[in-house]
Image (cartoon, rainbow, N blue to C red; front, side, top):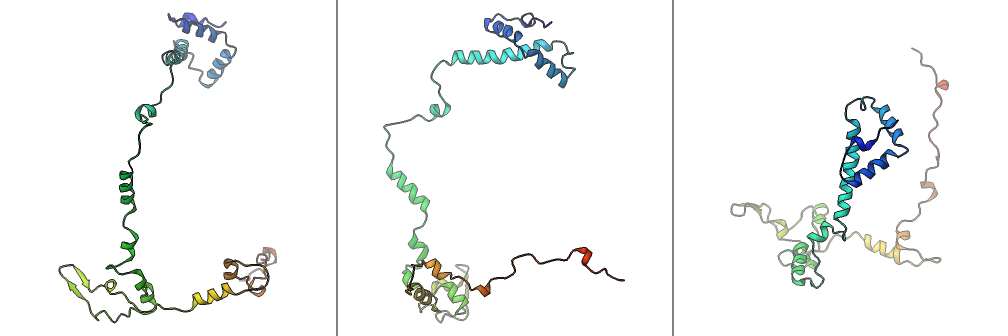
Length: 223
């Protein structure tokens, strides 16, 4: 026979008494006790196990009951309390503009130009000078000197840019002639004209893996 739970845990709160009676009449209460006994058979042998279970259940529901009784108002989140809205506020465009300028960094003209030199005069790039012209620059002396004041080897090559015509192999003209060539038929895009389909002889004819004979057909080595 199941013991009366009201005698195990006494309380003056009517809410706890009603909960204990409903817990006693629950159908699966005996099954839950049997299941927990299988997991830990020594838990029920300790004194006061029933009062501990009732105290755990009742304390949790009592805290929920008190919380619902106290907070019978419109819910307020921490975000709404910490960040108070100001509907009539207008953003400061001057501060936003200064912040945007600060994040952008240096303008484009200061990154490309050198010594206030216009970009259209830089006809020979550093890559072209190093790989195609082999560092040929008649404006630079044969040997550089060490500057004790600036701690640099002077003069710098970037201070004397080359103003000659760039090295042109005719690649752009060849591609432009191929792109603008009119062909009868459907219109082709630049991608299609730039990457033509390779001929059939360029493709591999083998469409399967390399045949490997089984071990039983391989000759047995003789020692």
